[in-house]
Length: 81
Image (cartoon, rainbow, N blue to C red; front, top):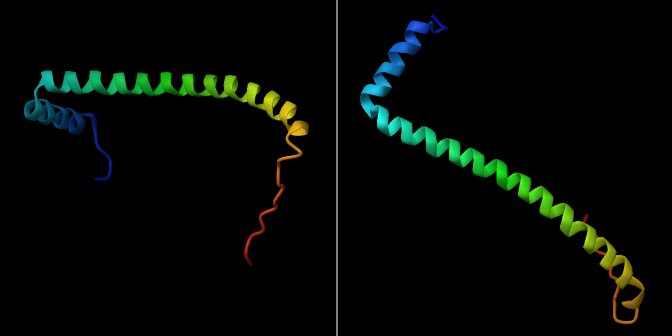
C-alpha cells in the first residue's frame, strides 16, 4: 500500500494533463529549464568574478599596509562573556 506502481503515476500524469493542459505544462517546463540554466550561469560568473576580484585586492592590501601605518588605528574587538 505504501508504494506506487507505474499505473498510479500514469493516472496522476493523465489527471495533471487534463487539468492544466499540454500548452501550459510545456511553458512551465521551459520556464523552469530557463531558470535553472540562468542559475548555473550566474554561479559560474559569480565564482569567476570572485577569483578575479580577490587577486587585485590581495595585492592592493599588501602594498597599502606599510603606507597606512600613520593614519590607521588598530583596534581589537572582544566578545562579551
